[in-house]
Image (cartoon, rainbow, N blue to C red):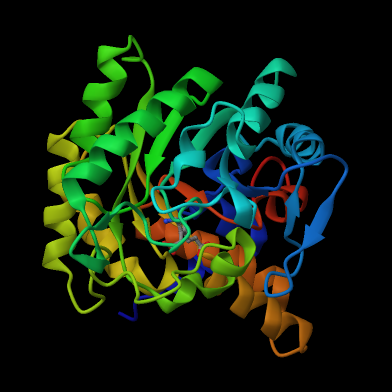
Length: 329
Ligand code: PBG
């Protein structure tokens, strides 16, 4: 007898009935780039539809996101050049771009989770993700940096962030941040670890948007080598042991194998970051008329969810949610 899987593909209603994966706006996390000032929005050329925003305009965008059902956002600060220094001290200023923005957003009473990207590359003059070794200006000093990350985490917690997301791939960072938070009565603040973050060329457009490209050298001394999969599971296990509440894999679509393997290993909620380069590729092809932009965007987030992600950080969070039907993307 011939097997007939096509029986269940007869018509949209039947396909919806048996659909295995669902993406809703609540699964999406909106990244925003914050610039100082008021009433200013600067378009990021390599990311069509994405702009650097001042806090007031970010609030406006988040009100829209909240209405659309998006439940979380992540902030990246764009630091003016004159505020950057060797140790990224502006990261600890209580009134820096992300801290003032989150205060404003919290004061407005939005019911949406505030996540902070915890790193130094947006604040250091050399563009690396921490303090550099005294005897080698191309190597980030791990243990000094994780102490500094603990201080930065406190600054974020005091400003009102609900979740801290360390993205620098320093060894022991999650443990150091957890200890710093707990020692200051922030035991309720969650950590979403960028547990598996590859040294990826797909971050190119982000570095334009956040103005955070390293001046000299690259990030291969701390971010992961894309030839490795087992190491990803080890990195994730270490972050889990140190107290991470959620784990992230980044980039998204080129690393679905990692996501799916990690889904088998951990019971923690998993996030995946559809990064700037993935977004830029889809948008560029769509603008050229080579791909159907709406359909590939939707398909890409379904692929990421199907591979094992509970949450997806995507620059298209609002766009996808706007087109959701009956609450489903
Ligand atoms: C900061 C950070 C980066 C991204 C997120 N957090 C850049 C980097 O590691 O250079 C990239 C996100 C994207 O490309 O969309 N460390």
